[in-house]
Length: 338
Ligand SMILES: Cc1ncc(COP(=O)(O)O)c(C=O)c1O
Image (cartoon, rainbow, N blue to C red; front, side):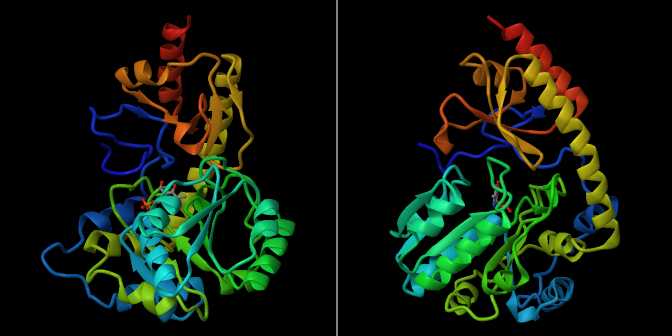
């Protein structure tokens, strides 16, 4: 039995050499931020109130520090917000399909009713009673985004149904095309989840934060059910440097490098007969011309994310990797061609 749901990245097998299965940037962390994480004081508890951190993040996000909720990763924040939704009396949760599996897993574990939507339009039409609504923007695994019209229609549906919006922005820093069209007004009324570790190539550091709406019946629950010292000292160090000028410059370079690498990787797979969905991020969905590739690739140290658990049998999700990793994938695929 699997301990947790299916994820990309490390598994219980030998270390992955070329990891296309995690959406994390392959370009490494900014040096100053990494130094801060490595130098974090592990000999003491962090401030249980995380005051300096919340003040720093609140200033950077232009909102009151009381609205910043540190979390030990996006996965923990998703569980916590789902529990807060239940405690505040909600019984229904809407999740994107295909979408990150943790939204549904968290809701199901709490006995909440899960509703799935395939498009923003479908969600806006079907949302009729109070619910927690997850939007992942840009979306994992599709890399798709909401248009201004999508947000507008959703905003109307949220208000009519008295629902609570939670926007997971885990891939905002890895958005390679366009910009978010979430309005400031709706953002103020939504929960927002910020998960910096993927863009920073530091997924082993479990750190994220939630931004609470200006007023929300979930907020007190989301604070009170947090374990004490939910965020480690390393996590505090990471988040303290998240908005620094050096980190932001690093992220600009990451996006520009990944844009070039993504195009070469896309062309390489197209030449080998792969079907590929358009994307605005560093990852996308693709369908190989033959089945049964994942296991032999994994045996060669190359990992792709099976999209079966997203409801897409025969498809994979892959992230942009370095030219060296792309060559390794190409050579392994040639070997395995029937
Ligand atoms: C959309 C999305 N949100 C949240 C997470 C959780 O990330 P973490 O717990 O590492 O912050 C992931 C991880 O893959 C994700 O894809």
